[in-house]
Length: 417
Image 1 (cartoon, one colour):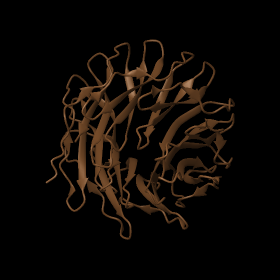
Image 2: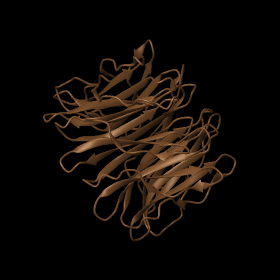
Image 3: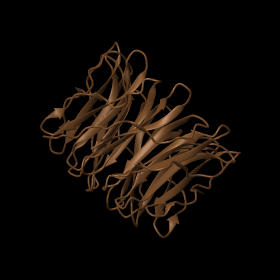
Image 4: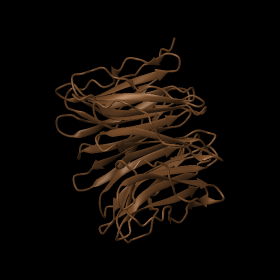
């Protein structure tokens, strides 16, 4: 019998100078985790971090960027199996927004933040980052060239540092936005993003292969009924990738998916939910080493927003979408998802109880299905928002979120073990 359970929520930052928000978290195979977030010092927003070590708990929160020219926001973090981490974020230099990065090494701590893009034509936005087991990292973001938004990337190699930022899409018909990135153990990476063709937004992808670089962007959906938004992507160790996104059919937004197989390319996009009671949004995707994938999303039933999930099994395809929460007191939103090496995912989300927003979770076990959703925080001083979750291969998980204490927003965490 699986006896895993969530522990007690705890505060992972103690700086009361200003609000905190936008937490992100990553884990390594030993169960250590690193959280990053945006925090105000009363004058500007800075990027902070804290580290969790099994048996020791959370350490002391620290600032990981020291540039006071302007505020930083939108942090993201990734870890490799040795516990090294790379964080990226957007930072204002007093004139424009740039993309910065910093690296954490166990036993040494965080290094010095640095700019990883040098194109000053316009603002840069929405950085994302992924790492492989060798500690290589790939970051993507979208950046204004003065006319439109384009997708850019840069790669970090241990012992060499960051390379030169490069444009990874060349379609000037319209702006590109919302990039996401995933990597496999061989260092191959797949990026997806939303791009306007002059009429509507489509989802495109490009693939990075070490020693070859980025390929040619490809359209991975051909349904022109309406715009697409919120693309997400995950990869397995064999280099297979699954992308999900939200797409309008002209009446409502639905959740779609496509799969990439090395040597074959992308397949045909398919609808993975068929509930037409209301629109769906905020899809997330995770994969295990065998190529099984689970997607979660928010969907309206005509009365309230619920959290649904579907599972992909190689050779079988997608199953039937299932409701993974049954609390009808209020809307549920912003689901997030992580998966262990046995194919067991954990989902977290924000849900209203009619008075405030709380953080909930559910867990899927192959052969058993989804369990019962449970509340993983019990602080009723104020609402909780933007949950994130990460897992190690053994099934331990860490969830983080920001929560109002009646005066300001703080960063909280809970551990599943």
